[in-house]
Image (tube, rainbow, N blue to C red; front, top):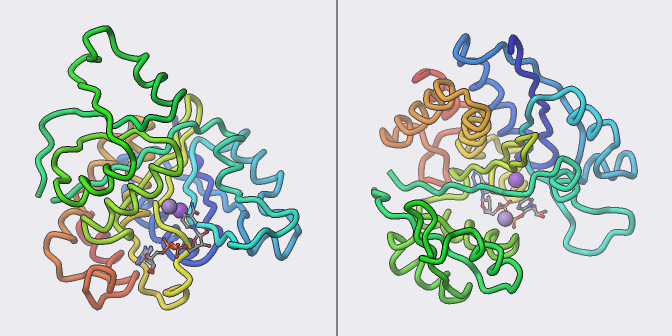
Length: 278
Ligand code: NAD
Ligand code: K
Ligand code: MN
């Protein structure tokens, strides 16, 4: 591959601030990845108010036919029912067959040394996960355990080290991953990828953060890490490692942190610190 075509869908709110930051970090990787070519694509609440559709057909077609991968920011979905509106991120996951949303929550402190899989007892979901391993309850060196969702939140806060990997249906995973983000310091740190067999889309776990929108203080790290996850998924390990290492160094040094991590730096300053490490 000579070029890497990356669809950029910042969507709403701080998505417009953190996705451009991730773009700069990708550009800084130079020859460690194929030459990136970015394609700006529309989606979200603002797009809906402007055009009447939250996910324009053009966005879907360009992603399907022209892009190797994509980065999605965050949508400001209204809490009330708005006729004609439905969440574009949910629609995109369906359109691109991105059946898994993978959300690694790492803390600089916990050493992971054993694999557990949490399965919520949701009938089909549970049985499907249970159906994967052999009769010994093992799959390779993965041991499968179960925990009900309410007590899972309780145990996640009391003894987070007992969990290595949690698999859960959308709603439970969504709640547990925001809770896990609090444990490690901030939602602004946590990346995800929406992955299928044919496409991958990086996306910070957080939303459009209307409370800090436009202030230039959104933490760009979740988006930079989402770019790293996306690159790793495509096999560009060196580029992904460089992004992760640069971010780790900046967080560990603690000199340039946004207010969600009790720092006083701006998005730009944190990004510049990361670019400096790259
Ligand atoms: P949120 O994730 O936007 O914000 C929760 C809190 O975390 C806020 O205090 C916010 O300031 C803080 N925060 C989040 N990201 C941050 C960052 N990068 N840097 C610093 N602080 C950060 O959740 P919310 O307030 O419940 O939702 C706001 C909007 O986002 C809603 O319209 C919701 O529908 C939407 N949303 C979209 C997605 C998505 O696009 N997949 C995900 C979650 C929420
Ligand atoms: K998001
Ligand atoms: Mn969420």
